[in-house]
Length: 125
Image (cartoon, rainbow, N blue to C red; front, side, top):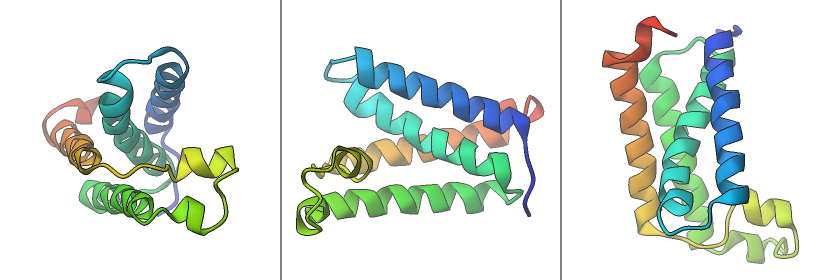
């Protein structure tokens, strides 16, 4: 079950750098709020697959459920209720604003993972 896959790890690092670039340099109304959320699902999937030899569907569903859980925490204003509103890390990791559209972006990221793993880059990874 535990393993190290350098290809998934490399993709995770690349996606992480892209996410940092988006956070620091992109201030628009599409890439940062939507594409960033799609990519973060793919990033989490690649990171987990870097260390876990589990089926694609198992890992991708876990990532989707985790993403939905974070969004649910935002819906209930968990950062404020936990007294973490002054913590920049908590505000960044958990987030502070719920959006139904974010759930769709997570589903899009999940779908991209499934499509690529089934039809696309499987041989490259």
